[in-house]
Length: 214
Image (cartoon, rainbow, N blue to C red; front, side):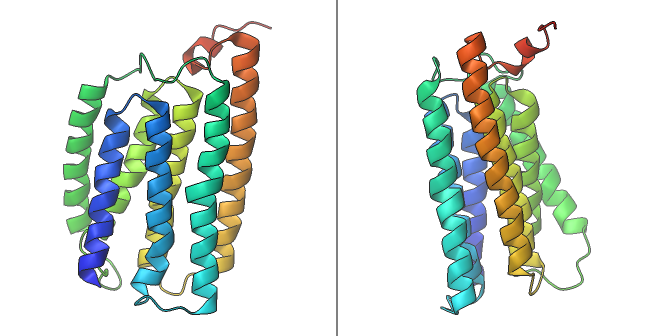
């Protein structure tokens, strides 16, 4: 089980680095969708691929929302935009990758220092959870496009979700599904907001919104 879990954690690290270094919005959406699908399988993998009904339903809901519904909503918004790239982020892509590597090293150090009530399934889980959360926050604060910031929000939630599934024993599935419902509403509302911002102001750079006057 540990080897498979390690592979999932390494996949999360690589996809986070891809998001930090990619300017193509469509590629970023596909990457976040891939994260969602893999994380949807994580509960089954951690339980020895048990086909218990509640696990199967939970995993199917995660895959449907994170891997299909959210990307579909964001792709629909992307088709309405007049740009397909994040052209001038606050922090460049090369620097973002360097900072991402530094953040990863810090997260590995923090993960080795954090005491846990019970040993984690994999020693990579805690550092990768921290790195995923920090990657999401970094995307939110370092990118100008509202759509990329939504993706950062989803990546951040992926880190929180991974922490809950991998480290919290017997976590209530209803709570997780409630969180997912909140995420669904947030993404749906943000998608509508991005569409209307783009239609009214011909741009979705959030830094330009500060220049608006009533």
